[in-house]
Length: 437
Ligand SMILES: *Cc1c(COP(=O)(O)O)cnc(C)c1O
Image (tube, rainbow, N blue to C red):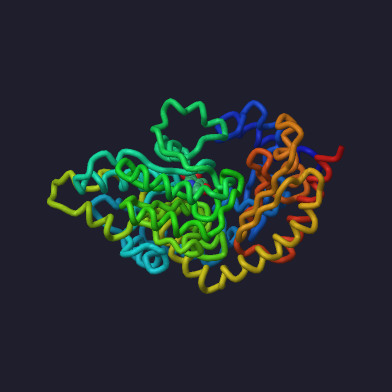
């Protein structure tokens, strides 16, 4: 691999890129200096750039990929659906493969009598959940349920509603004047956060439409984790005080934490479950708001009726995405992917403790399933340790992207033992290199 810039073709493509593409959460004035990888194709767990350099995709293309790239069975499912139909509207009409996928998903989600509202992004799944929770109460003639209870450190996506239940950060504070107010429980850093949230539910039930929580892991907060034991108490408080529980499993869903859904480990059966990211194995944009039957029922009535769910997206329930998602769900079971997640998780944790935790620059290591956060104890943020460690790892052929000074590891669910070894070796070397006194 070449030093610094990855090669001639990359430079040229990166220049064409900056001329017309605006990358989110990226300062475009320094985009070129940060040596972006310009991907052309992929094989298995590796991305291949326009110069032919290979990178192990250790962040699963920002947390969406599960079984690697170009999975023959998923490619085939997509091709077969292309021969049938790519997309038809979900508004007032149905589509065969979307029904088939919804049935398959209904059989595995920890939600009672589930109904799926499909959209394309995780943020839209959360936005739909908020709208449904709010309208649920108005449909039942209950007034004043105008607020939501969410957690410090929470991240639920970038639309204005999802941003409002999110706790901010990443420079999004600029949008504070647009956010609606939310009751805020402590972040997962506080061991009592779930107890405090349960008490807040009791105190504010009459004004709260729903509690929104990321079960087990607050991903974007930097892989902040809460043990499963605190969640049943929160769910019990919601039930006791008649407040809906929304679980945002956009990041944790589809096997990431070692079970198909993190809610299962927490003993939760949410009223609304938000899914996205891994739902199509990282192939196509699809998300789902999974709604329990008793919530769905509150929207039934005459037509026309103010009880109808007045919400929907043009591409919600895209047939190509549904075909891939259906095959993906089957493959997770056929290949016993969850067993690999658990085995590789144990290995990853052990190797991180042996090789990374002892480094002087490392403050803490957290692992749940195949989600890991490594806190770098930077003397000052302007050193950009997180960014520079990841750049160094990329130079060594492992693609990483940090959250501030937290290095995030999120390898594909089918990552091999050798690949886990390589990721940890490269990370340890990158940290040692960048943080050497
Ligand atoms: C990524 C994420 C979202 C937003 O999903 P997008 O597809 O990026 O809109 C919402 N919630 C959680 C927990 C996430 O990790």
